[in-house]
Length: 489
Image (tube, rainbow, N blue to C red; front, top):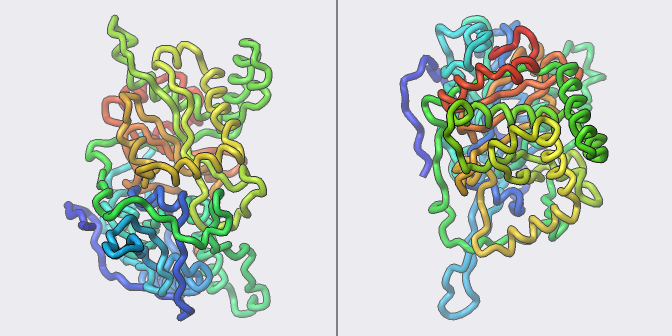
């Protein structure tokens, strides 16, 4: 059962309210293999930092309330709750043989909290050359909630925290409901509705949403139209839920990579692959692969710094994992507006830490590229089929990674620089920064976001154990690629 974590905090919650959409016919939307694999994960915790709005925070919360109700009328599953149905044998005994999970779209509502952080400023949140301050964790609701808790908790909770000179809007969004692509599509639709509500009266004729409506109907690669429930071979899903909070001493930094720096990294990887005789891999290298190579190798070097400076050896193997959007990889592709989970967690080939560092930047970029290239339509469908055929299907994509099974170091890249984060303007200006909460955060997880100035720049949030972060701070290769003035900002 969900429990709220109680700890000292400079943030005070002043009020909370439930926001419901207009009434509509009740509907149950069955979760697909991709959705079900998120049940034992954490809520998506992402938040935006804004400069002072032109209205009071209480009026701002009222404005968000009214516009959210309109957004929920379109994205009505967000206002629902999870519901489990137990399946029994068709005989006299009638034992429970499994269960299926759906979204009960009965308009139960989302939640908005109004909070205040009396002594926290914008500068406190965006501190140059420093770790992300721990107070940011208090800017998000639903502490310690797992996605399974969406049976009781709202699938969306929003905390509007009033700062001394700004506002932080933190979102807690159930990952079994959808992936990051759908989450940010929803948030931007809500923001667009909010902007229209603040537009001048004379502009009513132009008050038309530009964003395409969501494709609500669930789809899965093995069933197509996913109307039939997927029965999991478990009698009690609650027993599977683990609650792994981020360690108290986990350190987090935000790094900025300009478009020019990423181009340099990509060209360096291409040169190394060309020199190694792998022309095909060299031509296929992307900025994402080059950035993944740099971060993977630098984090690995930080973790094994002691062994490299002594005669100590390690047999640990390392690999890089990263979330990938399946929409354009399926044939036919799924529309970008598909509302649900449509992601897999890919993993590169495993290699010893010493070999990863010895083989260099080009090889690591190529390893990421090989994992991406192998993830074809056939591979996506095969993974989904294997998930359903498993005796004990995995109900979390991220828990195995966080646990570091097999004795391997964990390095995972989540989120995406393609999400429209800085376009999320609710009517009082674009955000000045993006931050995340403690959901799905552990030693070795990296979050990717678009850079605020656009142009292909990327912001990277790195979370590491204290000793590993201290070593990373001494890594010359990393800091040579980080934009000047953005070291730890």
